Amino acid sequence: MIKKLKIGLLIVALSFFIGASSTFAAGITYGINTTVYLSSPNLNLTILSGSVADTVVVNTGTLVVTVPASGVFTITSADKLLTATGQSQSSVVNTICANLAISQMTITAPASGAETVTITPSANACTVIVTNAGGGVYVPATPIVPTPVVVIEKKVVSSSSLNPAQISAIIVLLQSFNADPATIARVRVSLEGGTPSSSTSSIASTLKFTKHISKSIKSEVENLQKALNSILGQKLTKLLVVDGSWGRLTDKAIKQFQKEKGLTVDGIVGPVTRLALNKALGY
Image (spheres, rainbow, N blue to C red):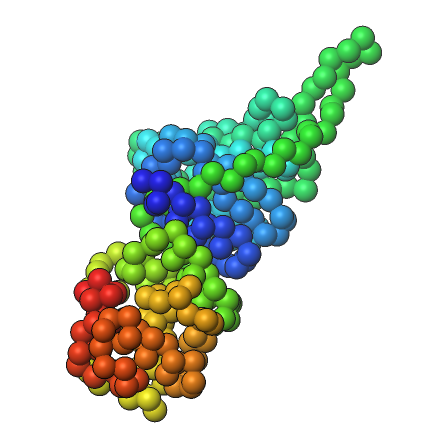
């Protein structure tokens, strides 16, 4: 469980600087307070424990939430007043300035069906009323940055503008958390702008090696480079740039893998080496 939380924290942290839209899969139940990050404005929002949603889409400046029938979803902001659009009726959304001037929005879907609401931080801070001898006055809330505590429910789908070197560096970080190869493969697909699948067979079709790898076929070399980065990770002097070019570092990495597995060190990805690669990837 701790391992999954660490990996989940890293994956969501990545979305902080990727700046892309991220979609949390259907059927989410939040067991703990969960922080999501908006890049424009630079703002943390906190989804409260007990919230439920069919989908949560994190855009650069908005959060689009679909709450299932009779479901309740609560989110807070310590910096800005939260506003809502898209609800079928005004009673679906309730926004208050809670303790310490935190803007708290509760979305309650009716029993008749799900509600999709777009949450947008306003330019104004949530305010509280302070009473003194001269009467009530509005005081801007003091910004409080929530501590990021994040859990990933099910799968994450995101698009990315990261270059191959950045993606490779992220994979090394995942490996430092002892993530299994299938998880690493799913994250890599997501970072490269694809749609990861929850099925093992989909991941296998991406990285499983079933035929001789030609040094002149870019796609085959790219898959080999991805696999070697995932398997060897920090053991490599330098992570391979996934560019489909069989250069000196790629040749050195496959020979390093062959040596570690007790195979003939010839740099050729033949049947025995392919079998060892697939086994190392969990297939």
